[in-house]
Length: 327
Image (cartoon, rainbow, N blue to C red):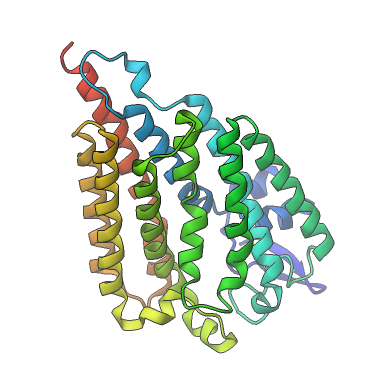
């Protein structure tokens, strides 16, 4: 486990993973910044990236048919690289902002009190400067796109800035998180098409429901501490009805995704990936034990598989339609 100097004494970062490459490559002086940005926990930026990649694959495969050039039905590699850098930068910026807003709360929760800000490893001024640096990276990424996409990206900042405070005023902070984390579904489509249509909006709505679902599972890890310090969440709201809520959320997400595919006229084989993702999500619900924090974390992380399945369905489905006549 990563060692830090907490309030003058050596301690452990409770929720930092052991043996991550971040701690092998970076000097110890930069570890607190890596922890602020959660570079040692890539699942966050991976989940932020998936709506971008889904939308990029969907807009590329829209209307794909036999005889099309293979390269025209594949998502832009340049755009995907930009989305990757942007997802890492903006997820890190969001986590840094969240830690700044939640420093007093994190200090009262066992799992988070050893994080860089409450433990004194980083000052608030240093955290704000680090936040600004990450935002500059995000800005550099956004400026590579058309002006409609630039404006659309800036519009998301209102949601991103509001999210850290939602857990104090509503039982639905996961809804606001979903709105922020799913914004890439709109951005990736507009980056290629220069405008929006029904398909990316449906993908966005579905991604919001998916996000609420997986973050509800995640929030069950801290529900007891959250109750003590007054933090609100859908985990506390749903309680023993969490499985029913997940059925509705995940089911709604899959319906929206299928509707988006139909609206974009992507090849029918893409639904195979969506079906496989549905099976995986159903298994999450069936095996979920909301009183087992370790299992909740594992199931939360497994949503990266959902991302891969849907993306693979879109890409391979298009390739199958285009290449099959040749074979």
